[in-house]
Image (cartoon, one colour):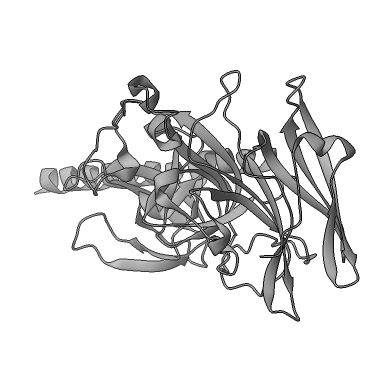
Length: 377
């Protein structure tokens, strides 16, 4: 009897020692990492099994300490983190990986945002379906920051044309599947004119997210998942297969000059950069835009008129970004254009002003090689 009691006592002491070690690792020695909640709401649970109970609801932006991680035994690739919350009782439990972003991954997004902190937004967009936000414009798994929710709105800071590759296109496939990328034979190989951009390249967008949408401020999105939010009152000016790339408001001093999250803006004045869908590289580089258009709304006629534009038969070779500066009715906008004589990329500043009730544009003196005219639409 005494021997059995001694054995039980030894077993109890061993259990307490093991628990103490676990306590030291989790509470005294500190967490291995930290994380931020990216889901609107999520639950910390007693375990990662289906029958586990909820312990605590956390919200977007809440900070957590990461204590451990494990792959779900039921779903391959599904990761769960054991975390400690920063509530009064420091609740510890398990949370699904897709609901949080680790400190290291979050820093990648912050570093990307910092690179473009002075960059004005070029356009606005939303995501068609749940899609990976990435630190680089490619499909490598290590570049995934987190999954952005369907319908999320954002500002677009930059575009990138990436040559098509035969690689798993995981962002454009049904859930749980991989869809191989397809290399389309360019039209130029068939003596049928220049190929379309979508035959040669995949489009990627660098986006900036509002803190209400995500604690991670920036990342790259695969173009096929992005819908450009062209303001409805100017969208019908997209003609002859030419699509808007960039637009900015000229009659507003607000920070939101592209209408991010709001397609139904009141009519006003806009500078718009557009391009046709055909590939036309120079020295191996594609133009970001080949057309400049300035529109203004006449409040008396209740109609838009064209203030200035490059003519259709003389396309420009332009690079982003578009910058709008100034206050009130006196604005300037700056773009970078390729000089057709020297091939140099030069910044060109256009002056915008009011002449009585009509908006006018004074182009740079040497812009004559790009014909312009005023046309009442």
